[in-house]
Length: 147
Image 1 (spheres, rainbow, N blue to C red):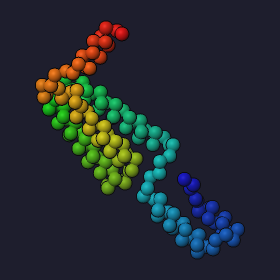
Image 2: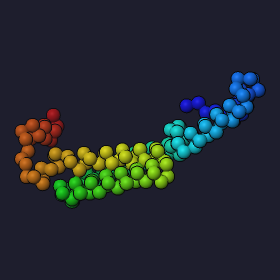
Image 3: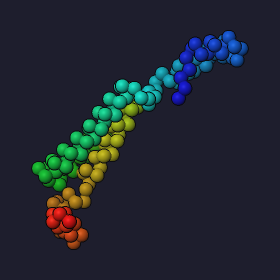
Image 4: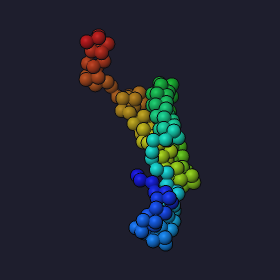
């Protein structure tokens, strides 16, 4: 997005493109419209936002997968739900209280990532007692045999 500075508007007034009153009104409008919105751009802070989001999503995926063995099906599901709700609450707080749109989007993404971690059918076999299918036995034996 193009950023328009006050000096650009003053130059347009000197060139006779807009009047001084129009430049003042345009500056007030552009200043008010962009003051509360954080624009995505390649800056150090935004790179840190995205890096932190990637680390959080990776950590939740790894530790929920590892923790599933210790917590079992219901414990893992409840933990995934709690993490998802916490991420949604943080997303809402970032939007409403701080008006930080990029961290809010990252937290909403984390909440979406928690859905498959809490509802993976393969993990629910331990909860429901379902038997392994023939396809899973075939692929497991093929992988184990090194073929």
